[in-house]
Amino acid sequence: MARTHRRIMPVALAAAAALTLTACGGGGNFGGDDDTGGDGEAEEGPIVIGAVLDITGVGANLGVPEQNTLQMLADQLNAEGGINGREVELIIKDNQSTEDGAARATTELIQNDDVDLIIGASRTGPSLAMRPIVESEQIPNISIAANAAIVEGSDWVFKTAQNDVVVIQSIIDDMAEKGYKTVALARDATGFGEGIAEMITEVGAEQGIELIATESFEPSATDFTAQMTNIRNAEADANIIWGITPSAGLAQAAYVQLGIDAPVYQSHGVANDAFFEAAGDAADGVLAPMGRLLVADQLPDDDPQLPVIDEFVADYTEEFGTPPSSFAGHAYDAWKIAVIALEEAGTDADALRDAIENISGFVGISGVFEMSPENHSGLDSSALIMAEAGDGRWNLAE
Image (cartoon, rainbow, N blue to C red; front, side, top):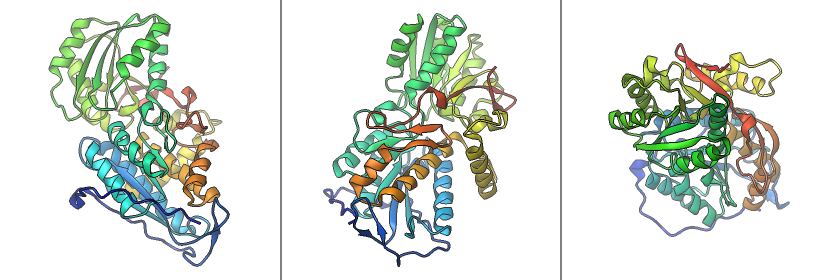
């Protein structure tokens, strides 16, 4: 039998803060067929998937393409008959790029909508705010944010964005190959940037690279003169700007304006075209580890992700008139993993959680996933390539 979710204690709910979208079925036979779930008993009626995304606020460059992706995939799935003959109802809520908003939206989805699974949030801070709620209520949650803390020691939370520590390892490895010995960091002051300095220090020590200066900035910042002046004065061999668009792009523009000559690396938080809109010509030469989506036209023909990426890019571009970002790819992977698990386990929460945890060999947009009880991210360094910014786009670095 489908699990009946325990209701959590009522909280103050701000209805005006939530944007709800419902995926409408387009064909298929819904509601009349029984299906066998993970506990072997009949399940029927719609499957309800919730999503908590940064659709407005500082994370909108992430959340809007993720919203587009989930809605498109839900429409496609329902047009093909849903999951085992059951319609899939998608309910998307806007957390307004805040931790409180994410917690409220998660509560609403569980308390009011009786969701079977939740996707999101777009960024680390909101995802961390969701974690204690889904853990307590035992609702499977697939985050699409980066920080490894989102899934560390978790029973019910999974994620599809490449872990930040894997990205740091890729950057430090590249620095070591080029003989750099010192590095300075300017990082996002939210959850996305938490622990990054410590990771650089730990990983760098293995390669003989020392972190000599750290600055922080709010994702809503527009003036980076103070931070970049301090980075320049540190005179490191190379520098890292760790943030998301638009702030990371504006920081890059200030970096170049202040005449800093040292090479600069950015995180996978700039894996979209919006980075170039914010940074302008200052983007040229920036290096950033990221997934393969934005360099798909440069991948070898035998890359196992290429057919998946090509189909997604074609569908998204046809639907929305613009190509998808890497963040749209994280949402794609979360949706597909959820569907695979629901097809196998039905909506019994324990069986569904176990099915996600045992997904192996899933070829997605962000990499090839190998989930396990010890690894709720499922991706390693093979999911990343090193990209270089030039001529208004990302290219495979030589």
